[in-house]
Image (tube, rainbow, N blue to C red; front, side):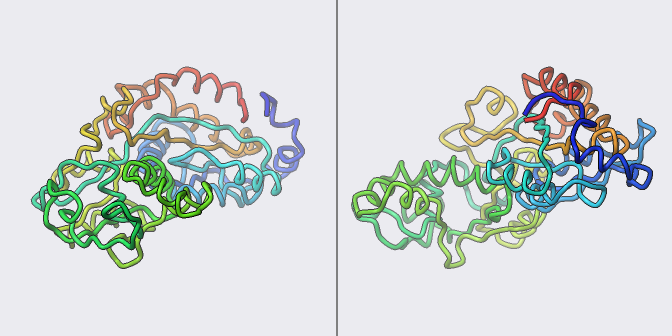
Length: 341
């Protein structure tokens, strides 16, 4: 896609024709990780601009992008928040429904952390192999790939507590799940030799990669389809449990949670910005370009979101936990020029 004025598209012309009936507020949905950042910006936008405060909903990255791709018009959302990049299949689904011009905005970076009750067991250091050994349905034991026999963390790592395995992980509709799978579970599968054993057993490489991402279904790994507040509630009710959170959520709940290192690195804004922490990811939002100039305040909201005083290293989003994007100036120019993917 290229830089183009939106009135040149059929969708924009059709939408503009009914602009007198268009709603007067920006509508946003998607990632629970991006939700608090978007909510902070929406509130500040409503206070500082002559536009209504944008409506921001959660539901997960996949859910938000699905709604985003439903079509063009005032009955569809303007922005989808995502804790992962949009997939090619989603771009195709958008195009089938007339959403052909999309502006991708990277707002900064976040890290995925493993946290537990502040006064709970001593979960202070994990490797990807530990998470795989705890949660995978099949693991390596004495050189063989077997059904996971582990019931306690100490069963496979004597340095971990002798506590029952219980982990609350992001559900499959969350962008956090994809990063959790790729950067932790898949890495653990390779590190333990399970991936190689799957190939040796006759699996194709693609099937082995899929098998590496599976989690056990005996109640020791529990998908959380809600946001991080639900995960926190589960941790509160289960002393021995660990949960997967975004760094920002953890940093705003240090009175309730403690965090573990991953591969010997503590998750902090600094270790994420330097790339030292191994489980970090960019955060995005996607703008429906055909709505710019039609839905009041849409472009202004997007520009405000990535302004230096908001998303820069000294802004309120950084204070909440966002790792500011070094390429923020490029993003600002892209939005100003309405540059699409």
